[in-house]
Length: 497
Image (cartoon, rainbow, N blue to C red; front, side):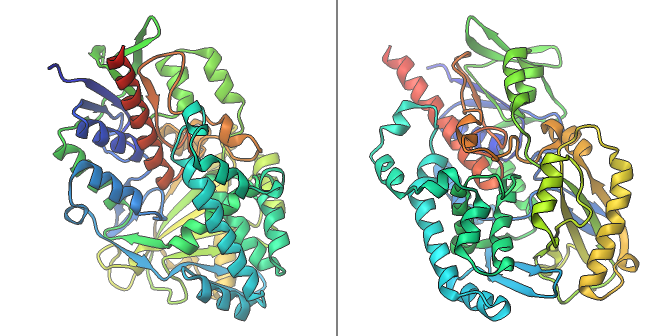
């Protein structure tokens, strides 16, 4: 019997996961990657003895990875190790207050009560509701295609709809949080979860209150070797399953004829396949690979998620007051998001996230030193002068951290690299440098996000952060699974006919 062939465009997390699933199902799989390395945003680099994860820095829901390895019939322990982290994040406020966000509901409630004066029951009730929302609604809608009738005919749908309250649909995440907590600091902590998909807490639906469940109920984890170890494990597994990854090999065009995908053109060569999966940004898939101006325009009209300005600092000393994940909040969160989304400008007092993997293990920074990854929310690229803005922002960040930590940060910076929205688009193919594709700032955002298939072209599927169910590592794994399950169903239908 002739082996089915599949082509995957891009080797981001979702592309690799889709390739592994297809190879496990018996497909001959070729992955075409334009860069010299795999992983997309989930990459790394070394500089002056410091090792930096270049992109995503938070690892939640390891069960997505475990499920993939189980599906492939391989023991995950042979490829990948990780540990649970007791504190998901260390929060610093401008008024001097500090909070450790424990990944244990009771401990977190105690901490917010002690440090902020927040009612313990407010915290426990919120996390309980967040868990109910996620388990009844998130599980259903994040694991299935919203554009397929079969999803809405499932029995759990009724239970899910009964869980939904009007504020979840009509109100904002900030509105939910404001009515749930009595301290401004607690509201700000839970507003931050909108940034998990690059959105504005003052606009994104109240439904997003299910996101804290992932970090604070299920837990935060650290992968041994840093986040890049996820990419390394996926590449190793893909190769074990017979997947062929072609580096420095950008797809130039998707071949389609009479409404069916036939393969791709790479370096002027036609590579034919039964199935094509695009892990490239959906905007560039339509614009460059399909030359479809109508669909390109549809994607272009949708608001982008925020981008980021990232500094990678090799620090010449250790900072005991910091942990793996740290947030230095802005004083006026509403003004910050107004600046990002309405004015497309960096805010003059930004929230700063600092990730330090050398806190977790040796070898990622020289002895007595630390590798800092600093992410500052930035608007998507609309032609700003990023070189000038970067230098201004650096001074603002140094002043802010020096003030809060009561130490001279500038003198501690031994080496530096950066990533801005232009570099993000150049290196990862993310339209306008947005980190999560389209934003989730509207009530219909989940339904407007591009599905994992297209009715226009049979045999063409989509996965990754720019399509359903969204950006971030857990959702990228889910998008790969959804896409491959759609491929299976479509293949079964063809056999039946």
